[in-house]
Image (cartoon, rainbow, N blue to C red; front, side, top):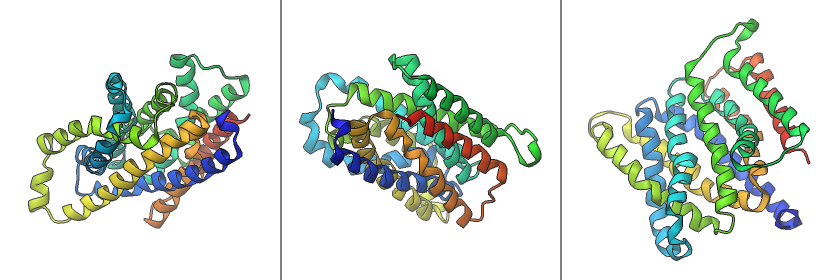
Length: 294
């Protein structure tokens, strides 16, 4: 099998590290951009930048995309990029960037759950044990404060919902698009949802007005440019390649490294990290370990 090749294993580690670093940085960029821009502006602008970057690539690669796949591409783009961008931008304007990054670590756990419910994947008891441990850690991370007190923060739910969408997407990509070249696939996905994001950005937000009259908008747009070109465009190509050579579970394990990156950025920006958050993250990562254990 392709996954057992030593060359592919080595490439998987490289792709895993680069993708984790890029996506782990995305949470602090969302936080910085959200000082000026609304969640809808951040999310749609992020896709818009990636759309512009992928248009020429798609034009060159377009013949590699079968005509009957556009509905699936729209679905993959919506659940894998468009909606999560909006959801993470919404959460990022209300909660710490490090918390968003840590909660994103539940993606492999939902990958197991989604794979079982919707894609008839079979998993052993060890993976189910990992799922329960990891989800327990997510509950601690999201709702428990210092001293053991419970506090319901409504803004963690957009992050949780986004991870469910990511889990749906990685299973969908593996099953429906495993034979596509990653560059052609990534370009087609973003070009499919790009017009939607463009309409939202210029037709449903005050972005143009802010660019003209609100100080700091260009700086915020610069943060989103980094987010869109690297966190969406480049990372999507790398992630699609990772899924193809290693499968959805291994690919979704970028969440091993992403929380560490996001926490480091958060600490650098002055965000406090509590012991209970560390315990919750430890539970999630322990669960992810068991989920990915051979």
